[in-house]
Image (cartoon, rainbow, N blue to C red):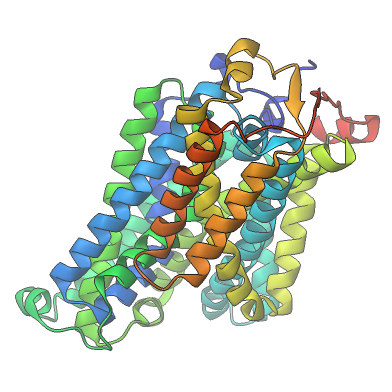
Length: 444
């Protein structure tokens, strides 16, 4: 197989041990994903409808679900060195099932990339009023695209800069606001808004970052050891959820509103603007990165062409940025949330296949440092389990939706696997496409 340049980040192949990073380098990016500005919004939503201690319980239960999923999917990614959409070929979905996963991931993350760019543009416009909001969207989107073009290495350095900046600036702003209130009263007080049930609160926590847990292999394929995955997950998820979300809970109690981010950023001047930008940049680069990987796998499996990652990143970044600048993405947020119900079963099926059923795991292990020689095409039983579990999570109003669909997918796939129903329609040689000459120029 032709060796890709470093900036191509081993998109359709295994990441070799020599190209992997220390656990801390990956952990900072994981923490950056979870301690993003959206966690303040999550915490505020919980605090507006729950007491402090009920919110703590919801965060604990939701975090436990996220950590379990992230560790399992992360270990698969670390062991095999493959991204989520490529790994799916041999973890139950087959070649064309993995193309659907790549498409779902791409649509979801490109959409959220645009939404986050639009949010940042509002803050940037306050700092640069002479630039229209659509111009601020373009500026922010292009900056993120520029970071992602250079791959995992540049994203690591971005996290080193933005994570401390976000925590320091947000910490200063939050302490300033909370110093005006009695924290003891905030902890023991009643929620200011309509009461939120424990199941609903847990669903907000677990469902709010389930997409990030499914795409965990995109990140952990750069880890050197299984213990690194466990350490960074426990550190990143625990600190990210508790540190940021619980502060959001207290702020919701203090300000009597769930829209605490707008208040904090609008009353803190340029500091608020920097909080907003730093808080979205360090998650939006991963939205674009994993979305691009999904596009590449989709094109590779459906059309048999291997695209250059830098080229795809530019194209995807421009599309997401243009949608943000046009101001139309707000109309698609409900669609993006609906799309999110498809993600927990993806993780459940991958985990059940790799650790329990093991129908295709032998092929991955036998291939060692390369891709398996053959790949399944369609696996009908897997697609049926995926559909049934997704519909259950969407339609059944009882319990925790994300957990319902996740557990059901594990149980159903295990049962059909043990019954011998996990059979591909056919197998085919694994295609190893190389970039066309025009695409190679973009890797230099």
